[in-house]
Image 1: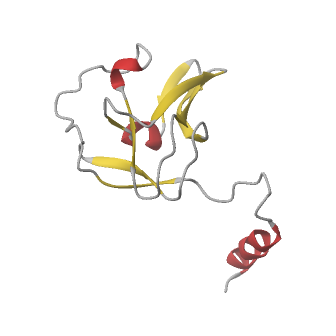
Image 2: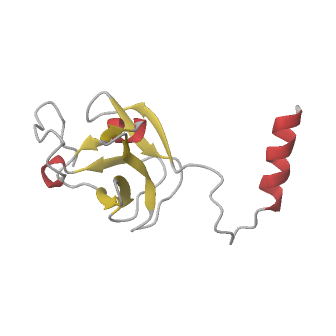
Length: 124
């Protein structure tokens, strides 16, 4: 094991299950049945948990993160954006099971997001 991995491994072993430290993100990217590439829960995500940053402000411009770019539209969405300061974070609106695609209803997003939902397959 190299030096960096050893330090990370040691840190992970010191973090208890009840710690507030989040040592891994809660999503991955993969092929979507809805449209192109999607964001998928890499673990069970409880309701009202912050999933990650979707848009952030830099030099008075709003920039989209990879997560923000990969969340696909569904009318029966399981996440929504919340403005916090100058940034927009993505929060679960209900429990999202591991492996499920993370979705947002584009019709209920801020005005800077394209509302055109053509091309997105609605899942049952």
